[in-house]
Image 1 (cartoon, helix red, strand yellow):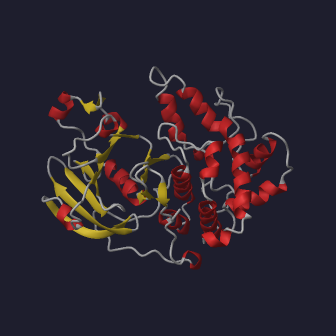
Image 2 (cartoon, rainbow, N blue to C red):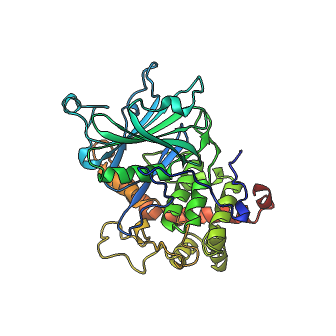
Length: 391
């Protein structure tokens, strides 16, 4: 498997950025708030992934049917504020369309068979444009006016297509613009085959967040990378089972460890977790994994009083300490974002009778068995003679 290895990684290469337009800033970290939750979205067939916050949902007409052969956009996603979300049988209700759909974020991918430059894809109504860096490459940021005012970004996909992101708004202070900024800042385009198998993982976003000391964003990025590398990723059930771990190449685990170890000065990363794992007795069953979780700060001393359903000891992503002096080895955390778990519970019903059970499983019951297998894989990979070859 080929991988996009960062030039000068081990010498601390500074990542250059292009001029920043006044309307679309370039930040490399998530807005920091202990009360804000984030989730990751992965598009398997196009290698696209990004982060979005609580209070928003992702949908697309193309989730329900294939695009028309003559349609300009062959892949699309919409990000809606949950209170504005109006799905209707795979389409949007005629009455809602007639009244004008509320402002939202759209992400579209257009075939570019003639290899036209990005400038040719710029909106004719654009009254502002400038070059910025998005997903590690030059992109065009612009602002235009139509039914709504909207900001947009154009960039090239690794397979030659053109990616367009746009946000609509009526008020310049609309929080949807900050969500758009988060999506743009966190956008990564991995290279995947026609079957959706990853052929190149882009680690630049992870390096950027670690360099900035943004442990929350770096942890989310690591979760996204591991899910991308999983052999059986499923957006509806986005977690890695024990059976998927062997599909993760040693070179990728080594790269993740090098990045975390380097930018945390050895405090975080798989090597730090491995040292604690090896210090624990090699017990039968999952006791060793439970002890590891306790030492890494992934467990409560006792189940929270409010948690009367699952009686879980394992902490969620909102209960971790995203600081430089959190317990040694606390990151990267191998859990599933709490927003994903909440989504499963909300979808429980006629369409998914087992969703609540699945949610409780991935929240806590999954971790002991998962960690036992995962740490065995870490032992195999970090002790392998292949380590130097990967870097």
